[in-house]
Length: 199
Ligand code: ATP
Ligand code: MG
Image (cartoon, rainbow, N blue to C red; front, side, top):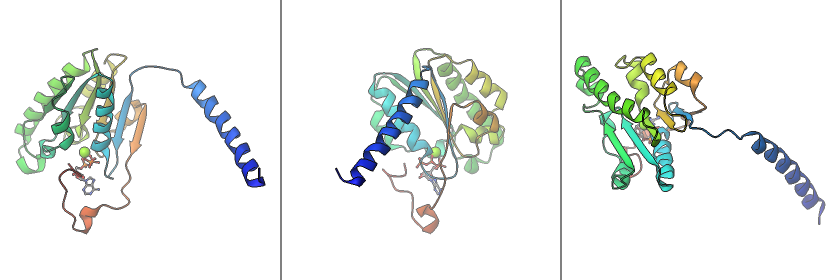
């Protein structure tokens, strides 16, 4: 073995010991609260990736989409035949298109009822609340209602929240928070959203 190989082997042994120690400490099994936020691309994509992962093990999954403007969605098209997947979509257009606070609030409350049902069902392994952060920001939903439903959910249930500007109380109660940081987005250089890539 060269010096370089020996050094590498030693470094890997050290790394393995470090990883093993951390893995040994992480033993708690329960549902989690994950928040995917930030201005960069990938929040909803990551949520659907996790939905696919859960469905892959035969778990029941509920996805609640809080902005119908994101209506077209290839993942949903692909996964919709799975009897373990349930999708609820807010029955209104883009909030900045409808410009009708009353109608938007009513539509939001309606789809929130579906979310509440999922959040109370111990047979549902994963619930995605896609773009719910905007509902809180616009005041269509109040934070206490949401945090209460999250806190009282079944112990084994995981919830993923997506959207920009996540409320600090959601960040505080989450097990895992990922902020997608925008380094660059093609949209700002004239690239139109692409079917099958951006939705
Ligand atoms: P995606 O659905 O691609 O994972 P996202 O959920 O992180 O994106 P949203 O804010 O929900 O981001 O954006 C919805 C749409 O806008 C998607 O078509 C997405 O590709 C696009 N998009 C995401 N981030 C940006 C950005 N920083 N600038 C412009 N468009 C974006
Ligand atoms: Mg999104």
